[in-house]
Each structure stands twice: as structure tokens, then as C-alpha cells.
Amino acid sequence: MIRWGAVARQTLLSVALAPAAWAQRISSSVDIGGAAMRYADSLTANGGSVSPALAIEWPRATLGGAATVSRFASGLSSQGAMNASVFSHAAGLFVAELEGTAGASAHQDGTRTGQALGGFRGHLMADHSGAWLGGGMGRTWDGQTWRNVLNAELAGWFKADNVTLVASTTPTSVADTVRYTDSQLSMHWSRSVVELGGEIGFRAGATGAVVGGSGRRWGSVATTAWVAPNVGVVLSGGTYPIDLTQGFPGGRFVTLSLRIRSSPPAVESSRSADASGAAPANGANREASLSFRTLPTDGGQVQLEVHAPDARSVEVSGDFTSWRPVPLSRASGGRWVVSLPIPSGTHQINVRVNGERWMVPPGLPPITDEFGGVAGLLVIEHKAP
Image 1 (tube, rainbow, N blue to C red):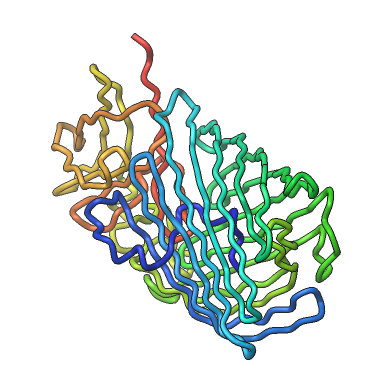
Image 2 (image 1 turned 90 degrees about the horizontal axis):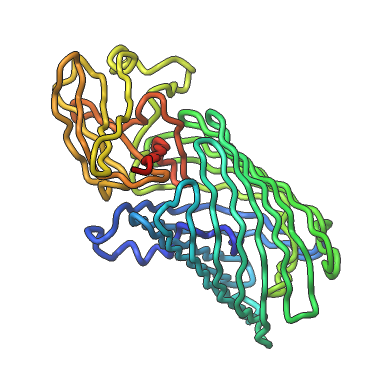
């Protein structure tokens, strides 16, 4: 089941047929598997499902979404959602965001739902932590009646090594008659070919009927084992709450699926390990000798410097290059340098030596997205003249 607030940076798989040249970066995946569902502790449904997802990223915008089509004994059930965001230039640690979400569903019993929401967020972003505050409004349809929705959002995140934690609280009002607040803590951990994620949540306020034992509390876990660069096995299970905006009941679920992604991770951390826990043998000595730093120059330029004495070529790519590889020039002392116009704020960057795999520049914290891609978090601060 798609959680409508979690579809940012994804979109329907059909968008993948559009030309990639106009996009900064495209990532896609599809899950094919089976699910056992129990709605409201009374209705059990088992069947197969196909769940495509896609994310398209530009320098200051994202478009994404996800869809699920399930086949149960009683018939087909489908749902999908899309999300778009536009970000401002960074002002120090502050970034503004305008975002919108739209989605719909159709079920075997003839019910239909839909919703469209828009909002604003203000982000504070540091190297290993951040927070945002926002709010929005929109309309939702439960199959019979359109209703107004208002919400607010306060959240924070923290990243250390391979673990990312996100905590959020979201007060919501539906048609001025239903008022509740969802608070949630989620975690994501990844290392080499294994990923683990989970969430727990609590609802205060008007919850309606307690459905499936998860009216006020819920939780789930998911683990992904990448058996090949493009193929993973995903096992997940848990509970989810009643959707008071569209009238979905709460329930319990267990899913097992095969995930196929469009490409392996774009980059890997130079400190990553293989399945046995040992450092990669290929290129390990070269990576151990690498170092990376930035130096401010005149005119808003930033000099990127990679120490790679044995390299034949060095390239960088990032959101500030529209993810196009940019070669560095050889300098004295085993250094490779390039000066680029990089604005103040947080950026993503990769480095490649001798045309081999992309990796996180040494010394930068890695960022992992839901498609398994990894990039280094680069923070630039230009001093005022």
C-alpha cells in the first residue's frame, strides 16, 4: 500500500519513457512479488503485486512517484501517487521548497479515492543533521465527497556513518471536523549489499474506530538484500494506520518481492565492504591514498582538489554540473584540480579515477537514496566580501 506522504522523488513508471536528456538524473525500480494483507482484523487478502517507482532530479527540482497494481482473488486493486518539488537557492543553511502531491486509487469492490495537496517547507541543512517546518492544504475525495485538508509539518533528521534517522510530527485537519496529529520516527541503515529500514508511529486526536489494532500505533520493518548490482530481494512486514483523509482502513501486511532497478548504485563509498566485511581488493590501495578538499577562489569559484598521485585521469560530477563528468587537470605533488562556480549551500558530488566506478570523495559523508544511489554531501559557504 502506498503511503501518500512518502512518494517524494518518485513518479509513475510510464514517465520513464520520456527522453532522459532533459533531466539531471533518473532512477527507477520495480518490485514484483506477493503480499498477505489483513484489513481491520476481519478481511484477509493474499495476492501478487507489481510496484514501479521513478525519480527525476534537476539542479533545484524533483519529480517522482510510485504505483502499485495488485491482483487478489476478488479482483484488481490499483493506486498511484506523484510528487513534485521546487527548491530555492541556498541562503546559508536555509533552503525553501514548494511541493505538491496528487494521487488516486481504484479497488475491486468499486470504490475510488483521490487527493491533491500543495505546501511549503523551510529547510535548515547542515553536514550531518537538518530540520524543516512547513504546511499545506488541498482536497481529498473518499469516493463520495470532496473535503478540504489542512496540515502542518515539523521534522528533523540526523545522519551518522551508514544510519539516517528522521523524526516528524504532522497535525492534520479534514473538513474542520476531524483533527489528529501523526508523529513518526523512521530509520534507514545500509552497508554494501544489505539495507534495513523501519518506522514507528503514534496518532493523537480523532482517530475514529481502532482498526486492526493499529488505530493509534503502527510500525514496520523492511530489509533488502542485493543479490546482484541491479537485483534485490525485499522482505517487509508490519502495520499501518487508518487513512482518515481517504477512508482507507488500517491493517497488517507481509510482503516478499524481487526488486529490479534501472542501474546499480551510481557511486559507492571508498570505505564500503563486500559481503564478507573485507575491503574491496580492486583499487583498495589506490583509494587509500586518495584525499579531497575544497579551496575558495575569486569570483564565487571553488577549487576542487583530489590527491591521486597514481591516477591517469580524475573526474567529478555533481548537482552543480548537472551530473555531467568534468575532468580535473594534473597539478604538482600528485594533485588534480578544477575550479567551478558552485553556489553556497549543500550539494551532492561524486569522483571517478581512471574512468572506473564513481565513489564518494574521501572525507565527505555519504548520502543514500531509496534507489541505492550514494553521493557525497558537500557544503559550500562563500564569505561575504
